[in-house]
Amino acid sequence: MSVTIIGCGWLGFPLGKELVNQGRLVNGSVRDDAKLKSIDNAGITSFLLNLEQSTHISETITESTEVLIICTPPLYKNEPKKYQHILNELLDQFSNETLVIFTSSTGIYPKTANNFVESFELNFLQDSSALILAEETIRQSRKAYAIFRLGGLIGPNRHPIRFLQGRKDVKNPNGPINFVHQGDCIRAIVETIKNKAIRGTFNLVYPDHPTRKEYYSIAAKHYGLEVPTFSNEPSTQRIISSEKITHDFSFEFKFPIDNYPQLNFS
Image (tube, rainbow, N blue to C red; front, side, top):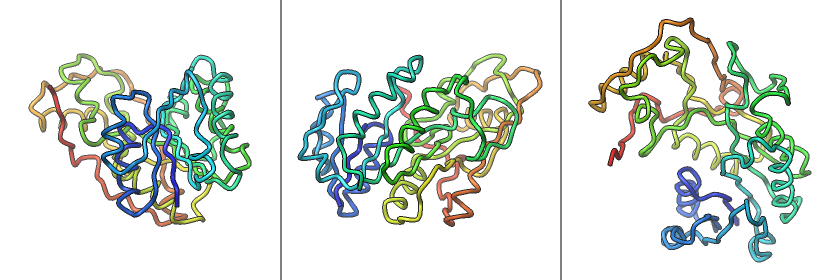
């Protein structure tokens, strides 16, 4: 099976390596030619693609691709229609038999108190309209698809405490966190390629939701960093539910969010 990953970055690169390890043929795009060698060395066939400049992909790749994974952050957040046009041009190059896996974000939901599930009715007037329109573009492409709304990403060299260390009056102290580990994102995508029943839109968030104050305070102490201080303002109880994928497909999260990753602070 040939898989093409658009965006071999922090998530797409280790995903590609896992698929290669499983014996799949993998193509992977990067924006910078300095990264081509490391992609090729991992057994991934690299190619250059900067979607802000061109959407064109070689027919050698598009005609052999059975699974297309779009693993890049949205472009032109303030111009959703422009991003939609780019996605349509990208998708049109691939067969209607191609499975499309799109990594969206739980940032698509309003920043209000709620227990958000996938059936929540989204409003195109939200700040997340670029993501909303992108998801709709995937759904209307006439291709089989799986959309994963990823929570806050943690994993190798990635943890938000790097940016919150020592901060003062951090807001929403008792609000719950909605995080997911890189490892579980990779597992969900790999499982989707194997299991043809996993189609549709899914939240992907670890089911534990400690408060921001609790989580960041422990993380800071773990890394020997200055613990941030928190405001006393009322907190927003915003929880993203992953019950759909765990209930419907027995997906188990195996990378706890309190198993703090190694960080490079250089």
